[in-house]
Image 1 (tube, rainbow, N blue to C red):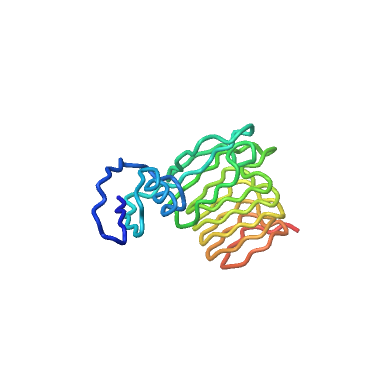
Image 2 (cartoon, rainbow, N blue to C red; image 1 turned 135 degrees about the vertical axis):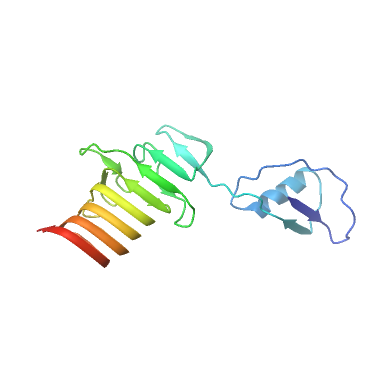
Length: 188
């Protein structure tokens, strides 16, 4: 709900219909709404009733309309052709499951950036990928140029860089770890 006011403190009698604002700049959008109803605004008071996060999904040929980001998402892979980078933030309450398990493909593609609250990756993480979360698991392997940051981090085969509080690695292959960790096997 938004309340439009003016310096003269006179009553504004225009009826403004309910409007869904889908923008990061709420004030700018509300000013545009007031202008479209020919209401002069000197003060603006609004309450955000519900926050939903939106993203544009790229299908490889064109950008589509804004789509809501669910708090629990399942995707086959994260790549330039499918989703692009997903950066909703570690405090967003977004949990992501990436299900690509083909050893010849990357579940998180080259140069992708993912920042969510929790992520489970069933496959591999490609070169120059960046994953930031509070909790993350990688069932496949990481490329040597990967950067993973999570408070709780479980990695099957690790070759890149990992930062966190509780890190568990099944097999470390020239990877670097910064934080409290447990390693089951080391190669190289």
